[in-house]
Length: 330
Image 1 (tube, rainbow, N blue to C red):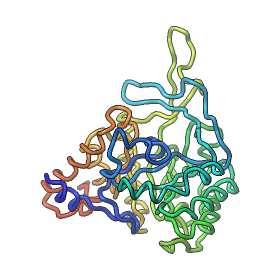
Image 2 (cartoon, one colour):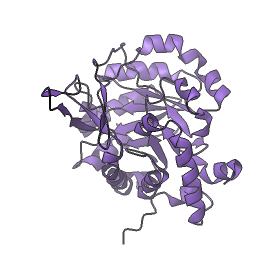
Image 3 (cartoon, rainbow, N blue to C red):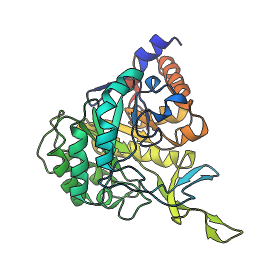
């Protein structure tokens, strides 16, 4: 399929943000912004989410913090990043020009350990030209208290409400934890509704976009030494092992709240090939995140996009958006 036709059938709208295609590089897997450009033409994907930034610099966990698994990868990086002061000084001023030069759409990402920390980073990022959206990571499973906000509807309402007050120009992506199987829809509802005070470019009280979901807590042991293989003992499992779980979560959030609320979903978890991405779209995702796949084949997002275009054409639609949530369950 020719590039022009591929672009046309895959062109996507993510809460008012126009994307070349629905393939998004997951937070941090392509570095802070464009470090991955030598391995993959970043202009060929829909968007790339930068490494999560915290209020203070973090070294992260000791080696080993990334290891292979039989059906994926375990990571316990521990939110290693330069901190918002260095990010604002060294990277923020050139984001717009660098992104324009390579034709990419960059998204920011934030993590923290208190509402004040999240707000501090969000306020700094919201000022930056060239960042149309910021992901709020409330679901990191390999740092202490990393999932607290993502496990409590009340805490998440407080956080989202506070962020809505400072995110006046950027759209808010809330990254939902996979650990809340029971109250998942209520967690998603809290992310969307916040404290009920509209704001930002979408005039919403909470999330403009949901990201479902994150890695699953896991552990690996070296049976010869009898010691954990990760320095942090446990980490987050990603890759194809968690894909069927993530598909269910996307469908649950889509049918339970996101469809009726008009909030798009980024499906994330174990996408290695176009069929995985197509599953997410049928389950209710408007866009599809890729992360672990980049460690296997840096060019895999291009293959996934091409496969999605051919699949959409074979389904007789003019746009892949027509297939969002179209799984036939009866």
